[in-house]
Image (cartoon, rainbow, N blue to C red):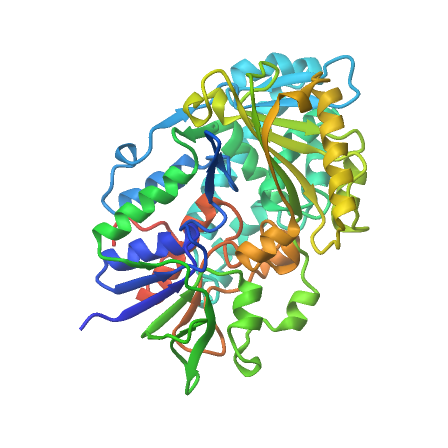
Length: 501
């Protein structure tokens, strides 16, 4: 008889682990509280406009390919991937000399720009990216696919030596200061830390590997939107017999004799299982779905945790096209360090925020009516803020006013024919996110080296998957997390990516 597995939550990690386990012969059921599968990688349509609600960057194509190969699937049959060129556009606020630059993730194309920003930089940037690429391959081969706490091989000298080579005790800010002088160059190389929800002054320098991912691999986009990834994972799951239940919030993980035996739904239904995996927010799983004596990470742990930012998001449907924007656009605030202080140290709505705009219709015009664009505007804000309707209305106007100046679009409000906003409370409501964080635990030094394990220390047969556990934040990283929980359940101890199930 097949062992039964229940997975709480259908984010990328939940769907990813479900497919691996279902293909390996388990009886898998995925339970989702919301109406749609996908977790934060959600989607909605309104008045002819289609909006991806959460993740919008397709990075680390090698990780996606490796995952699909594990399932004996050709990724090209599921996703129509387009390599973006430029990868993204950067707007430097109050910079009259060079206010707008395009990054192509092709060093030969980007070198003239880097030379303009910092004359003589060519040999340094080439060496920097070469080292970043080597460190990325090392990290992938030694650490990213390794289950921590599985064995003492983590203490072997060769592993320790490779760890030291990744500069774990140096911050990204100090590391970049040793390489480059130009503040604009450093901002371009630091922006990827936004995907980790971290401050460069507190993020380990090991994350310079993000620059290798950016410049050596490029940025891609799946035609139809990021939700195509969710659809592909659901298709593969159904092929292997995974069952899905939507609109089914869980109220409790059932524990008997210190062993997970199933879940209790809010409607009173009890579902039995041999193994339970939670892809729900880890704080919610630990403090709401488990009784105190069964919590590995109780409320006290979360009170001391450093969270990634929340976000203010605007989904805008326009009545025309905007040539000033590329597919991905980043507006960097003038006082970079002050912006991070407002996000992490003295929490408040940022005065001069850096923000991000995605215009997917640049690549995929079918996502809006002919001759129009849709925009996803994201401003990182601190988690846990209590905001009034007046606060939100005022900040929305502030961001629109900034767009008028930064993008030279004084009439932008007149172009908007559809608008929806999304705030911290929406993250709390839709994803049970602790303090409304958009991403979860930030990748600080402590929380990188000591990220929550993907299994419960208090409850047998209870596992965790997704951004809250190792290795961390991001869609490809959540697919690695799916592989790690699969390894944990199957008692596979290799630290390398699997080649077959």
